[in-house]
Length: 212
Figure 1 (cartoon, rainbow, N blue to C red):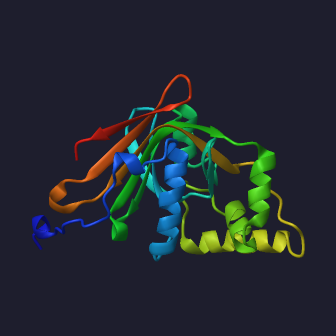
Figure 2: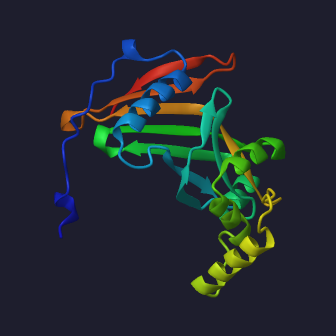
């Protein structure tokens, strides 16, 4: 297969300056709601990019669980690779890509843990199997086999049989506080519409159009 032959012309909606919200969170909410109505699977899936202690980048997909003017929330094991990277360098990037509507949203910002109390509220709302899985998986660590993981899951299930599953002290939420947010709308002939919001010192946002 010649990979260079894989191409299509994006024919998404146009994006004009006059149509943008003054606040990028409002703009994000508008696009996110549209994605929830039109993207068939996991519209809240987002690529999270971090850097390790040697400044080597690493990316993986996480699920956005909430957002507001304070930032964008996801949850993970505090001992995972991504969490270790964030502890060392809180600067991260998020990328939402919705191919079927030819849209991307790029977010740059700093990340911090949320409180255990707020994490518990979310953890308590998870399906029981996901709660057990949080306890059972030593995320990012080498394990001997699939069966060892399943055995650990079964042991945790039995340990908390007919009991509420407590919040693991090694698991929690992270908030990405945005400093730059870019909205990318695919157009014909690679003449895409791109607008970048940059947070100013007075907490207002500068809006700039970028070349595709």
